[in-house]
Length: 374
Image 1: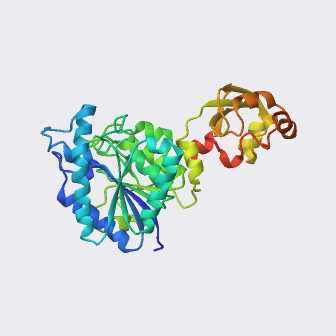
Image 2 (image 1 turned 90 degrees about the vertical axis):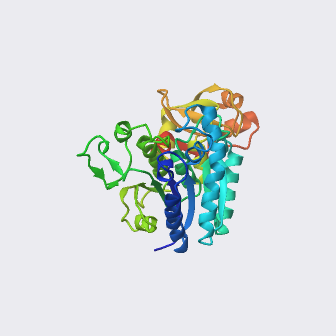
Image 3 (image 1 turned 90 degrees about the horizontal axis):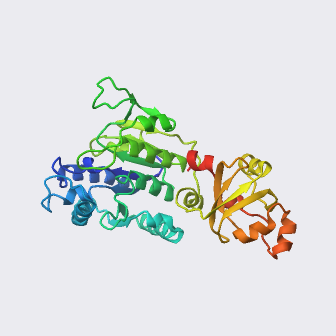
C-alpha cells in the first residue's frame, strides 16, 4: 500500500460518554487506529471534536450547555482535557502530537491560510501528528464549521490529502434515517453528493455533538470538489482505519481516484475569498472563459458594479446577470470603467498599464468549478 496523506475527523459522539466527558476506552481505540496508519508510513492529520462535550461536566452542567457563553466556557475547559488525553495516548506509541486551533478567520485571510498550510507541512515533514479543532472558546460565530465536519473538508483540501475519513455514530449514508426507518438501505458507494441527498439528510446531531448527517454530506461534497475522496461511517477496532483504506470500512465510500485536485491558491479563491465588486461580461467572453479556459480581456467587459482595487476578488456575471465565477482582478473599478470594451493594446495605452488581461485564468474559478470541483 503506497504512502498516503489522510485527514481523520472524529466527532464528539465517537469520543465521549453518554453523559459527557472523555471516554478513555474510545480515546484508546482511536489513537491506536491512528498509530497503525503512522506505523504503515502514512501521514495523518486528526480533526477532533469533543472539547465542549469533554468540558461541560467539570463545569457542573448536567447536560451539554445551550448558550454561546456556556458552550465556549465548556470548550475552554474541555480543550485542555482533550489534548491531554490525546498527547498521553500518542506518547505510548512514540508519536509526537501538535495542536492547532483554527477559526473561519484563518481561512478568510490568505496570509493566515498560507501560514496554516506551511505549519501543517512542516509538522508532517517532522513526522508529527497534528490535532486540529476549531477555537470554540473564542469563535465569534458559534461552532461555525458545523461540528468540525466542514473544517475537516477544508483542511483535507488545504493539505491535498488523499483521503478524508469522517468517523461518526452511524455506519454510513442511508436512503432514509436508519434510526426511524428499519428498512433504510445503506449506500456502500456514492460517486458524488447531490442536492436531493443533502435535502433528505437530518440537520441535527446527538446530545453531545452539533453536527448531523447533513453537515457531513456538505463537508463530503466540499472535499470531493477539491479532489479528496471521503469515507463516512463508524468502524471499530484498532485496524479500522487500515480497513477503510483497504476498502473494507463499515460505512459509505464517496468519490474515486479520477477527481482532479485543486491547487491551494484556487481553493482559497473558490471557498474563502470575499468578492468586493462585480464585472459583467458579454456572451463571447463568457464562452471563452467557461468553455475554452481563456483569460478575461478588457474587450469582453460590458459593465462594472461596486468599487474595488487591483488584486481584489470580484464576481463575474454573464450578459443575463447570472454569476459564472470569481477571480482576482488586475485593474481597479475606475480603470475598468475607462477601458471596458477596448482591445488589450488600446487598454494598456489608455491607462499606461503593462497588464493585458482583466482576470488571468490562473486566478479564476468558475461557478461550476466552485460548486462541483471546489
